[in-house]
Image (tube, rainbow, N blue to C red; front, top):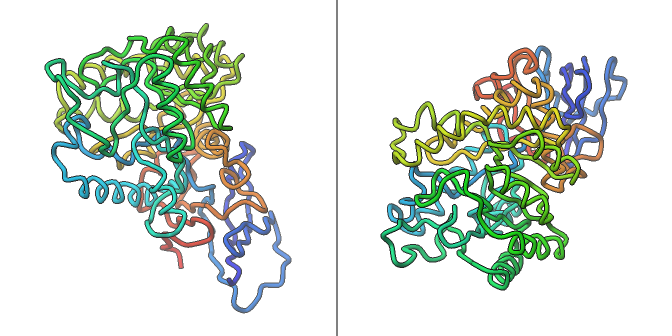
Length: 411
């Protein structure tokens, strides 16, 4: 494959240092081969492709550590009733493609799709970000992953995209975790507290006992993987930390004391601000149920405060959007919202280098360095001065994944 040479770019390499300019990045065989700042002295082969990036910023491909490819309708509990199983897959594939065109070249699906999506993308059968997958989330009876109404006597869904597996007690959760690992999950997702979309619980509820959480974490860790937990309340977060769960998702009610526990236990924290911002503003327009909207507004009020608490305690903060349904196109908003606490550069690092570590892929993606995969985006403007530009697809001039142009409106 001929060399691809990006010339005269302002480089934000994802590591948190000052931008480098003028920078030249050489890509060969899908890998970053060389980075030069200042005068470029290499003899350029005749068949090399030159991309002029003057006035533009080159960054690593963005990473979202909390997406749900399989949740694409406004009410996720009604979604399986509204679609044939084949339609569920087709719509999920469209979400994957759209996520890639938002500039996200790698993502972690936090519950829903199975390993087949990951492998199909890897083989080039479908277009989308590289995926790490959870498979089905683990939920207790009446927990956040239990989609039944209080009037339902049986689960209306069976093995449908996006559903959880309901399991109770140490033996059941252990077997369920082992089953998801057998099916090829990269990590185990557990619903450790109440949520907004679930019809029969509240966000501040604490779910699963410490012993059940310990069993789940043990099985994930024994397989050389880890568990991530959905939770909002301080008690549920604290139980997860004590149980050995590595990645805490949402955590909107988290205080400084709980944040310190995360730091001391070397846990990752993945806040998901976008879903609350978008759903609070547009939930009625999207047609989400009243109970869903009420709870979204409740957890929205303390979301930024929780991130601020984690930041002050030195917690490693990743970046996830958690958008579902009509909010799927808003994933890049997460950087603007996190910048309110982390600053623009901190938000970019969170969605690149930090997330690559959370996905256990920091040897491959997340920063612009020689030897890394050529996952990169080129944007028109300076995201450190205007972080919101990452939400404007017309200003994302280039999206490259593994050295392949997904989008290129420069050449």
